[in-house]
Each structure stands twice: as structure tokens, then as C-alpha cells.
Length: 400
Image (cartoon, rainbow, N blue to C red; front, top):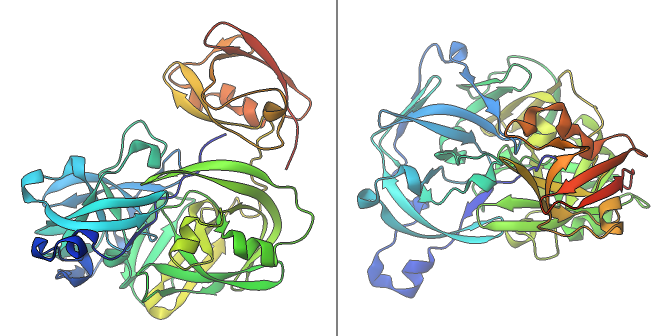
């Protein structure tokens, strides 16, 4: 099973300044934002992208004349540059930010120019922190998370089916579809909307293109509104500040404005999880949005979703109960899902697999047909060779 990973980052109080006022730490909220303009031909200036193994939109953009790899992330309040891509001599102290998994230290780097598609920004700067590769599921970390501070003044048109996006002037409506409310939260500086769960309106929900999951809700929202009787398992994800374990269920329908999405994978965060800590009810991620053409226009107060070719396609369910990390010559068990066949047969986090039905794990495993086994047909018996040479058999089963 592929890992679906969140990259939300909410800037909070600058802890370094509170400990030592002489440190003169300035929050990104109080820094000059720079001046941004859209070119007259911005509607034709599509930016191509691919989806990372963690389901995020990855593309190339320019900062101060350098091409950098970036993730389109409406769940980040201020765009973030990786420390690995920043000149340490130019990074100013920036305090801390709240991220999934905990808090992270941040800095600030002034920039001269930033450009992508039809947008050019002069002046301003970028928040700086460590961006681990695990946050995208790739072997290499990205350089930049492009967030609300750059994107929100415009309409963001994401054509998932064609793997491209563009920035338009707010108010443009290039196509029609279901309409849902959208705004930038004054408290959190991220895109927010609402969903209908079990016939109840749940809000605020962060609209987070940097989150590879479909929908995540707080434990409180789930207990109050979820349909009764749904089987629930567990899963794991990695954010900027580390890993988190949550419960997982498939919900028959979720409402998003006038849209009704069917068979939606929903993650239920722990009682002290990220969404609750920032005062929200959860997140709407790329795992759901990617089935639509999406127009995000918070200035106009709306999001438009037009069904794509994969709309209402049932989510891929694990039948093995193993969530796996992919290494060049082996698979590493990251999480054993509650109630699954792997949990019933003694599998543990950290176990390593070097062959499936006698076929070795190779560097191209992620894109090979071999990788489909962990969500294979229930009843199939798979022989797994551990890297210590022992073998185990696992009977696949539908369990959630």
C-alpha cells in the first residue's frame, strides 16, 4: 500500500522571541510580503506536475533564478524553503511552527524574485525549515512547499487528469461543476471549507493540497457524526515533525458543498491530533481532490469541482494489513493495520521483506505489477520471504 502523507504547516507564536526578547525574532506574518503580478497571458501559462508517491502535486518553479522542486500546498500558511536549498548565512531566525507530528524550528530567507506560470513576485521571502523525504514518500526531498501566502489572491485551477495547473485572476470561472464554500482562515492563514458527514455539517476543514490522504477528521467529529457500524482499522502517515497513527474507515458518502463523493477513505486523528491542536475539524486532501478538476478561489469564496474520469472510484483497500516503506532491495513494514491478516499472524513494525512469491524486490518495485500484491484479491495466499531468509504465508482478506 502506498503511503498517503500530509504536509500541513501552521505558523504560530515565535517561541524564540518569547524566551529571549533580545533575539528580535520576527514572525513571517509581520514581514513584507513582496509584490506579485500575473502576466496578461496567465490563462495559457500552465504548469506541468507529477504526483509524488505520497499523492502531492510536485512541479518546478524559479526562486532567485534557480529552478527548485516544489509541492503545491494550500495547507501551509507561509511558503517553506528546505534548509538544504537555502544559504545558511542568509537565513534569519524565525521561531517555531506547528506541523503534523509536533512543532518544528523555522527561519526566514529574504528573496528577490519568485516565479511560476504567469506569476512573478518581487521581494518578500520564504520560511525555512527541514523538509524530510519521508514527507513526500520519495527518495529525495523537495526544495519548497508553495503555500497560501503566494496562492490565495488568485484562482488556482488544478487539472489533475492532465497533470497541470495555472493561476487565474480571482473571479474567473472557466468551467462549471459542484460548488463548495472556500475561505482563508483569519486564525490559521490556510484554505478552509466544510463537509457533511453522517448528515451533519463539519467545519472548519482545511483544504490541503499537500495532504495525500482523502479526508481526515478529529476524533471528536468522528464520534459525534460518523455513520454507525463502519469497520475501522489503523494507518500511519508522516508529517514535517514526524509520524502519526490514526484510525481509518471507508465512508459511503461525504458532502462537499453541492458535491456528493462516494466511498471516501476517512482518517480519524487521535484525540490530541494536529487538527484539534489548531482548532479545526480536519482536512480535505489531494486523495479526494485528485478525482476532480478543481478551482480554488478563496477571494471569491468558492471552490468548484468537476468530476474527472476517476470520480467515485472505490479507494484501494489493503487486504494484507501491511503498510510498507520501499527501499532499493527490500520492503520495510512501517505499520501493521489493526484487524488485518498481518496483525493476526504476528507481523511487527520493522520486519523486512526481500521477495514476494519468489520474486525479489528490486529498485523498480514501486512501478512494477509485483507491488499490487498487498491490495490483492481476498483469499489469495502470498508467500513472503523475509530478508533473514525465513518465509511466511499471508492469506489476503478484506477487513475494513
